[in-house]
Image 1 (cartoon, rainbow, N blue to C red):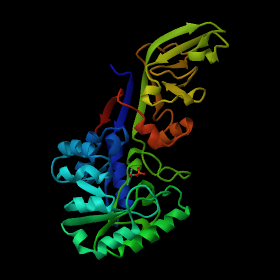
Image 2: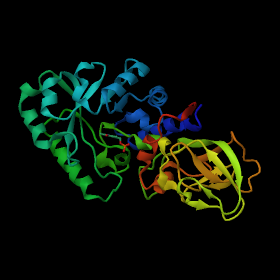
Image 3: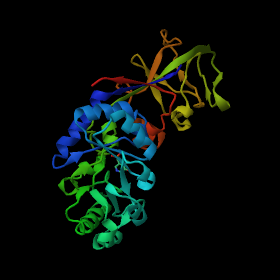
Length: 347
Ligand SMILES: *Cc1c(COP(=O)(O)O)cnc(C)c1O
C-alpha cells in the first residue's frame, strides 16, 4: 500500500499543451514524455495529449519508445532522442547525433545539430559535409533538422542568439528540411525561435518556462503523504535521526510515510511546511528514507490515515518545492520515484 499519492490533472496538461500551441502558432507542438513524462506517467499523459491532437512525441530511449508505441498504437511519431540503438526499432523515429549513426540508418530520421550545447548532435561542419555528399544521405529521409537550446530560460543569455544564428546557417545546407528548435522556454523566446516543431516537456507539467516572471502554465500536480502514526511527546524530547529537533513544549508529532527514497531530500529539514486541512504543518527533524515527521501540535483531528499535502493548491507549486530543495522543478518531478500511487483527473 503506497503512502504517497500523486494526483495528476490530465485536463491541465492538455490545456497547457493547447496554450503552447497558441503561442507557437507557426508550427506544430510535440510533447516530450521522456523519463515517464518527467515522473508523472507517460502512458496516461501521452494518451490524453494524443486525444487532444498531439501528433509528435519525444522519448529518451528505445525502451521508452517501444512502451509508448504499445500505448499509442500506430500514427503519432515517436522520436527517440538517443537514436543510437534505434536501428532495430522501425516503429520509432531515431534522432541521429553523428555521421556513424547516419550511415547505419535508413528511412525517416531526425538529424540533431549541435549549435552550442556541446552535448549530443552533429557539429555544424558535419551537417554541411553531409549535405555535400549525396551518398551519405542516400536512404535516409530527414523529417526534421533539430537543435536544442542551452539557456532558453534566460532570454538575455548570449547563447540563444549565437545558437540560432549557427543553426540557421547550418540549415542552409539542407534548405528543404523542416526544423525543430524550441523546448518549453524556447517557445517564449519569440518568433526567431519558432520552427516547424517545438518540443516542450516541462511546461506541459506546470513547470514555469519563464523563471522570474509569472508562470503562464497551469499546475498539474498535487503530492500528498499519508499519516502513519501520531504521538504526543513531552518538552525536551528530540525527534528523528541525530536528535536534530527538540520539542520546546509538549508536542504532537505526525509521521508520514514518505522520505528521501520518494524524492523528498534531506535538505528539506527546517524548510518544509506541509498542509493539513488548511493548517500549516512544519517538518521537524531529519527526513528519513521512508518517513518524515511534522509538528501537529494543537491539531486535534490529526490521525493515522489522514493526508498531508506537500505540493498542491494549499501549499506550493513544483517550482517552489524545487527552490526549497535547492534544485529545479525538472529534478523534483523526475525524483518522485515509483512508490507513489498515481491518480489521474480525467480531461
Ligand atoms: C528534454 C528535452 C526537451 C524538453 O525540454 P523542456 O525544457 O522540458 O521543455 C526538448 N528537447 C530535447 C533535445 C530534450 O532533451
